[in-house]
Image (tube, rainbow, N blue to C red; front, side):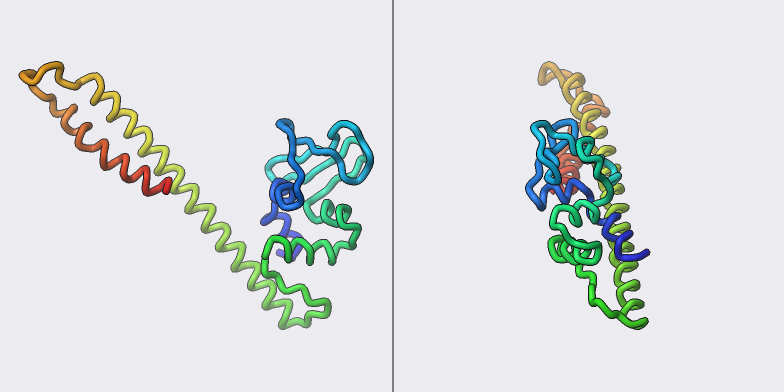
Length: 177
């Protein structure tokens, strides 16, 4: 993986919009900063597919956007993104073989950590959804099987659900927290 691929995977167009104060409308359009226009014609695509302006027919990746936005070449755009998003990628102009290998290893390590974090977030989301389902079931059981009088016998299902609810609620708070 080279530096450009790493940047394209790490930084989305939405990140670029936030950093450089562009606010897409509901449909994902912004006013194009590359030509004069009255209505927004630059589409920010989701899923890191980049951008395209239907007015001036420009488009591309996050690097292409920064190139045009700051009127710089590819290398300078990479340096700007690296600096503005604190990626920590060394960008020396004349890197030798050893320096390139160090950079490559660092990028692979950064990608591995990013991938592990994404996997951990997916696991937490799945656990959260499972706990939320369990909480809803417990809540329904408690509501509908609650004894109507002090003399009425408490069912085992009601007792288990009533005891389980605070535990599930605590675990939900821990994940969300």
